[in-house]
Length: 368
Image 1 (cartoon, rainbow, N blue to C red):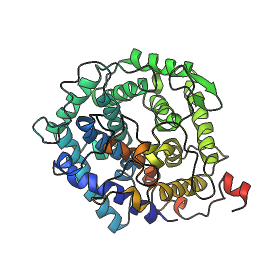
Image 2 (cartoon, rainbow, N blue to C red; image 1 turned 180 degrees about the horizontal axis):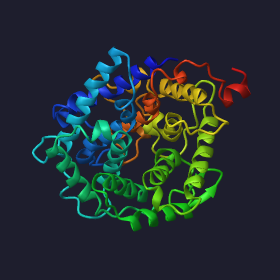
Image 3 (tube, one colour; image 1 turned 90 degrees about the vertical axis):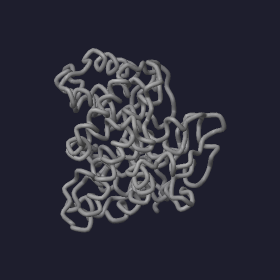
């Protein structure tokens, strides 16, 4: 496994979306797969862009010295910035029209939050280069979603993520909202790295997809507001859950398909990828081992049959399996798979890419 293997898989995932979105042609190009009557078309564009950039962001701002990769990265950086422009411009055919959603819970809150997380991960790439007019349009999007009330589950962290970006952009934020939702999620902690998705326990991957990554973001981007011991406590819980994720992967790269949102494919290992990229894993999971785990699930879930003939993703886990998709899943939703590629933010010169890894837990147990 080499860095180039990660990168080639990421480009295959990203190119159809960004090539269309950079020209304002995403809605025209990406036909939408969804459950009959789900009515997800109005959301799917921002879903695709926010989620894809969420995983791309560290690579877009990484220290890269290889000329070929620098040129490739520059191409995708330009497309990413153009895609943000087209998504937020009210005069664009790709405009994510949040204006008629009211102030209740809306999918736009979710995907604005993933876009916020992407910008926070790479502000020098995804915020600073944006033209002033684009920045104003992005601000209008976040002004709108800040008014939306989340459901009483992992959605409260979408509101905190939006506030964290607002804090970065304006220097101001609703401190009480962030702390109240942070404390609410803390009250849902069950032990051994597991939070509830709301007040009830759920056996699924939302601890990795949303809860731990966004709780860590609160600690990282607003540490001055945290009570004594909170930052350390949240990180230790996240490190423990990353161990759980590593333990779930079989020697062949398959993993337990349990719970909802399995159509995010390798993206369900968001937390493991995030802590690998940040070099914050526990000593029980060498980051080179995490590298191999992540690539094994990338290979297992992003197979040739995972893609449609037009290059966009099918709904499924490792093929076209439309029955996997819940009513809130559409083609754009699937690009949270990009989260598995966060380690591409690690410099190509880092030994991470060349050091041999100890086998992961299930390989050691089963001797393969």
